[in-house]
Amino acid sequence: VEVSFTMDSQGRVVQSSFTPPVPGLQVISHCRNIQDRNAITLYLDYSVPALVLTGETTAKSYRDTYANPTPASMLVDSVERALLRSKIRYDYDAAALAGATHPERSLLVLHKSPELTEIITSLLDRSDNMFAHALLRTIGSRDYESKGMECMSSELDHIGVAAVKRWLELQGIDTEPLFMRDGSGLARANKASVGFFGEMLTMMAHRRFDGVRLCDLMPTASGRVGATLKNSPLSSRIVLKSGSMRHVQCCVGYYPADEPRYAFAVLVNNYTCDRSGIKEQIGTFLCNLFQ
Image 1 (cartoon, rainbow, N blue to C red):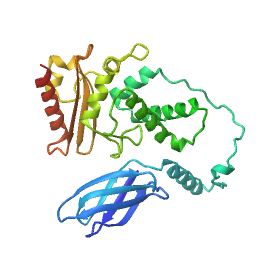
Image 2: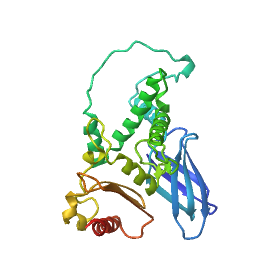
Image 3: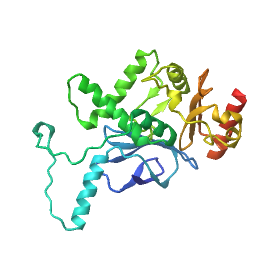
Image 4: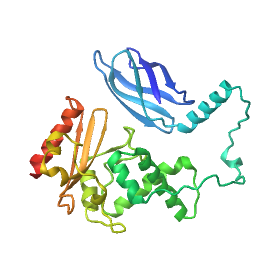
């Protein structure tokens, strides 16, 4: 959703708007006003719901695109507006959970997804964030089904995160440095330390699930972290997954690709060069490390 907001000299939000509109969504500021400083960090608070701003800012207007914590309300509002524009009459009543019933259903279409290994290979290669999000929600759904329980779809993120953390802890991984809110990883509320990545990758290095290891599904380095590594013999011998958001660049992986001896995690925050520059430096670092 595109968000526009204006900050005053006290660091308060004096005006905000969303495109398309998102009923009930707020912009909340916990920023400090410092002249000529603009270092705002945003995270999603699903309980309000709100986009929460922290950091330092001066009085000015901002416009950017962020993840929407309440897609359902935006969808309902967008459909209602489209119907009104087309002069289509409709009746809509939001039913409380206690009064909800299970109407008769008719199967419209049956779609068979690719194999799980194909899905994971694709999301590691192309960063199919919605695939990752769907996998987490599937884990949450299966976790409740295994207990003979039902849950609302809005609860699946929380249940999936709890199930993933529980499994990691059973493998001896410290999840204290893992702040996970959803499966897509698109919001800054999702955070993890390089220590966590290192432990998790080491644990997964030689584990096989249906005969397949994580390193078998990860893409080779190729041109993901600069020309130096791309043009090095190491390019095909390192597998890695890179990720980024504003002022953040990260990559994790294994070397050698076929029989990992090393797991690595590189995370750079608040770098001062452009993104291509930091990716080149990470690639050079990996070349110096493993050549």
